[in-house]
Length: 74
Image (tube, rainbow, N blue to C red; front, top):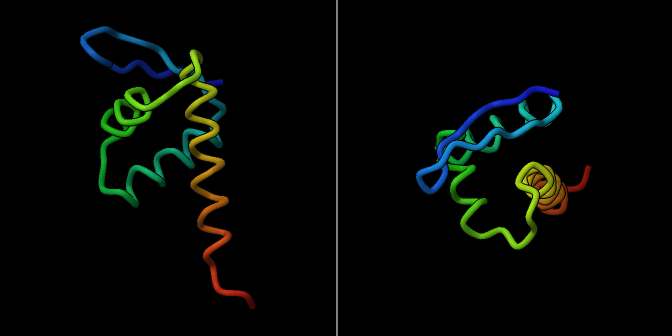
């Protein structure tokens, strides 16, 4: 697990994710031309669950599933 800290709504929070999830999260942010902090804020503002790390993992999963669903078939 790797922890990173962000400021969200005026307070500091730490998010712990596995290295592979951080890599995927960075790819999503880059693709959307957002900083990691901006993407974290966006997710935080729309989340319904309490655990931010879990919500981020689910966001990553949905993003890759959506891309796979729209990819052309071989």
